[in-house]
Length: 381
Ligand code: MG
Image (cartoon, helix red, strand yellow):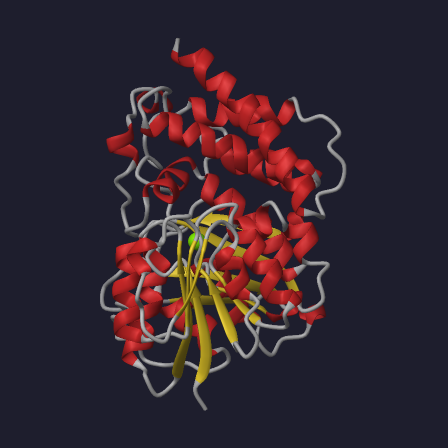
């Protein structure tokens, strides 16, 4: 039986790799829908090649999609989320980047569609809301670390698990003395040692914010208390995650860093297919594990604190970080200032109520963005 899939964010890094998996296994997939943010031409090319029944473009100008035969075209903000709720879809791959992905996750779950989740914000800013929706247990994570943990947990009873393990590459500066970090510019921070990813997530890896957000993601996905989620730095990026069991055993998941593996697993769960990933090297290699440097890379402990606080705190964390990373990429602030801006914004969070609606989350997000922007600007002057 072929799985009927919708790929949201199909022109982004995760989306492109998902389409590779689908091309490799035409016997396993029926592509129903594609969506993109602004890359209309690329989306058109994908639609002409792969012939979905629906495409969606978030941008209003969809003229590049005119005249696509036999394809229903949706355009404008919210059109990706509309595709997430299409009837008859077996699994929605949410590869949308940023906050916009939350609406698609909610829409898919409410329509009864399974979700292969690559959009982190759905759980970081919307975790308390999304986890309360019926069908939230139909989310299969596509983030590599969470896919690893998900696979290690399969077939296990809850009572057997004592803690979760998330690995971090440590980013390009893990071994650097703190004083050298003051001079780091965007070019340095964009050099990731083991994964090739978009600029935002590469900076988030260098600051360890990515790992902090992944702790929040893991907390919501697996219902694990923050105290029982352990982060270790593993420079080789071969072990992606693991589970500590009651008897002292740790089950680890290892694979070459290749996003097609968690994508294919998320799309075809519980089946596995060969996506052409290279084998794990076992000949004379060393795997190392080390404690994170939380005193220098402050974003990880800040994210864990924000997660524990809950409510508006993770929303503010995400928004402040996005503003600060953009300021770094534009050369307006220094590397270490990212964590400072995030911390200052977290310290100023007022009572913004619960975060269980789009409106509440949007308000908290806007508050934190304004707060972070004024701090980044003060810094640039
Ligand atoms: Mg990850």
